[in-house]
Length: 121
Image (cartoon, rainbow, N blue to C red; front, top):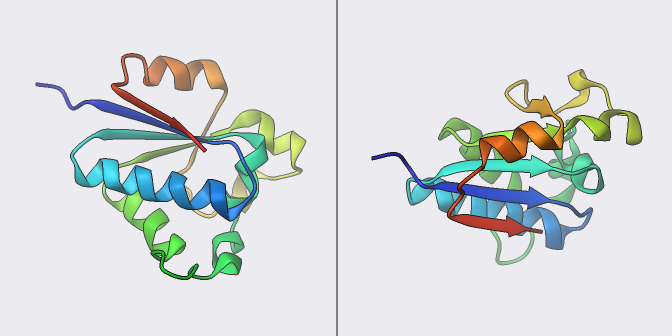
């Protein structure tokens, strides 16, 4: 039986966007979901080298760098919207991890077709 898919979209530039994106994504991984994260231009900065570190560890929350690393280490897919590159003047080598994939929205939507859970933060 195939794993259930979980789609998570980060569409904001605040701690209130990135922390639930990471928490829900890693929680989905721990429940054995196939997790696909899509990063819109608005949330792009969090996926650039050094940005999560600036957030620190918010009071009462898990460490965002550890969450991000766990997400990739445990098999989650992080997709960075291709439009964010030009929109935010980001180069592929600026991304915090080479395992982050760069795609447009349509291929991402095809990848998450049939997702049993979808979250947007």
